[in-house]
Structure formats: C-alpha cells, structure tokens
Image 1 (spheres, one colour):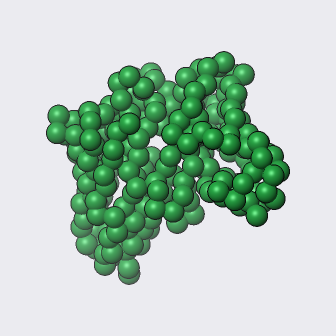
Image 2 (cartoon, helix red, strand yellow):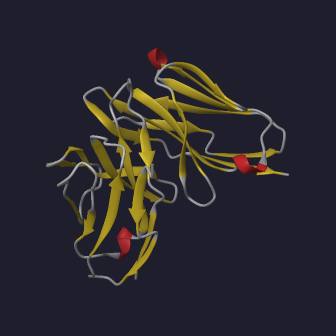
Image 3 (tube, helix red, strand yellow):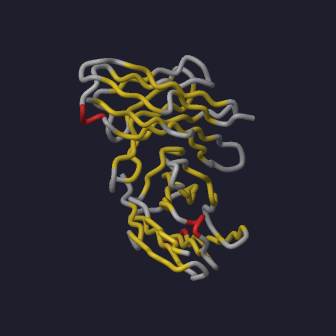
Length: 113
Length: 110
C-alpha cells in the first residue's frame, strides 16, 4: 500500500515554463488537496477536491490549475512559473470513513529561476 | 478561515528532557491532527485526536475541543525527535480542508 505518491521530488524551472506535479493515492480517499510550504509560513492550501470532477480554490490558488478526473489522481499544474512559486509542495489525501485523517506525499521541492 | 497559533515557535532541548507543545485555534475545529516534519522534509502523522488523550510511546497528545486547544507532550526527548511539529484541524462546514499553524521547530542536542 503506497499511500500518497508525489512526483517529481525535485524540479528546477525557468521563469515562464509550465509543468505538472503529479499526485496519486491508492486509499480510495474522496478528498485530496495541494499545499505549499514556505519558510516560517506553515502549510497553505492551494486547491482541493472533494471527489472526482469537483475542485475548488484554497487560500493561494493564483498561478495554479487542478483537475480531478479520477479518484486516484490529482495533478497540480503551474501555468507560467514565477520565482514566487519557488516552494515545497505537498499533496494530501483524506478519507472520511470513521474519521478524517490526512496523509501527505513526500513533497516536491520546486525552484523557479 | 481559522487562525492557528502554535507555541513555542522554537524549542531547544538536551536529550532526555520533556517538553509540551501547544496549539490554539480561533474557532471550533474538527479532526485535529499532529504531524512531525523530519529533517528530510517528510510529514509524518503523529496523532489524529479530535478530542481526548492518546499516547504512543514517548509521545502523547490531548485535545480539549470545547476550549479550542491541543497539547503534544514529548518525554525523554531524543535527537530523532528534532524537526518541525505542526497541528492542523478543519471545520464542520469544510471537512478535510486543514488549517495549519506555523509549526514548532524542535532541536534536540545529544
């Protein structure tokens, strides 16, 4: 049981490039989300999804797109990378059977130059 | 949204010492959880504790939901306890959408 798998672990982009961060979970969880972590800021929610075909914005959505075509996958797209998007990105998955415990992927460290 | 205040922001301990980390919420939360971010950046689940007390080895946690706070106790600390500790919780109206504090940076020296 892999849990939540994020790829890549590290990425360097040039300003203006686009890319997709992948996130997959094998726990059949309804809820998935993306956070970014910046020094001293804790974890801030970018986008989330309560099920396949349903997504919504979090606290810091600008510059990011998401889609949820399957229960398992929740990719995060950077449309035109900016240095302000240099951060560590975490995907999380939450199930609601008997509680709502979140599980995180291993993170993606993104640098935009 | 919910404001989450964690204290202390930084904590430096000698191995073997005990410590208490606190998490205060500005509003009622559900599904309160504690996480440890190890020096490699991984977020590890410590406790899922919407209310009451739980213990796991040298760690224990208590949540008093009516007073909107939670405590994490670390006894006989070890160097492997170093890292950042986060608490997070969600609201009934937006289950799953966790609000996090800024974390407590714990450093344990041998």
